[in-house]
Amino acid sequence: MTTFQSEEIFARLNEALDAFAPAERQSLVKQVNGVFEFHIKKDNSPNAEVKIYHAEVKSQGIIKPGPAPASPEITLFLTDEDMVALAVGDLSGARAFITDRIGLKGPMMLAMKLDVIFRSLGMGPPKGSEKDLAYDGFESSFLILQIAEYLDVLSDEERKAEVAKVKGIFLFNVKNDKKETAVWMMDMKNGVGQMKKGKIEGLKPDITLEMKDKDFVDLFMGKVNGQKAFMTGKIKVKGAIMLALKLDTMMKDTQEKIGFFGQKQAKL
Image (tube, rainbow, N blue to C red):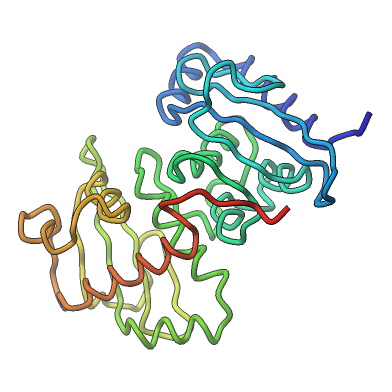
């Protein structure tokens, strides 16, 4: 029988979950709230063996071999090598989706919570790293990561072209239900552009956008119109308001690049 490196990954995830206190397990379930099914292909060859695992992180918090007992909310298709890379933090979920290394059936927002599962169980990219843009308790963290990873997969020339189109520095102040605030700054005015958690030293924003976490998610997902959100006070804007229109265009470019509204087929 073919040996899969990811077998050890799933075994370690299971052990970590078993060591959780009931309150810790329920906290993870509350954050993720989904049922995953993983179709792991040994390699990229046409007839390579496939192994299936599932993670029920909606009510119990269990990871087991085999298909999910009921219809999964999300199914992921990837190679054994990429599954290991995701789990140890060598490959972020966002980059894997953008570069078509993961096939996806189901909502992208749920798929992006893979990093939450891995980190909670002692795997995945380390917190506090320079590229870590996430705030605990903010769904919009996943969206900010999409924009940052979208920039990362572009060449320097492509990034300069994006900067030339936007020509602005954005500051996002986002509040969640606990009245906590997440701050991100995006420089699309200088060099090849950058996204940073917190403020970028020495830069002054051309536009500041203040909104609730849910409203930011709805805006990115196309559930709410940006102009309507502004007119109804869901988004408060200070500064060069015309830049908000350019941000809307950039979000749509990101959505198109990563296939946010549809399923993605991995190039296996």
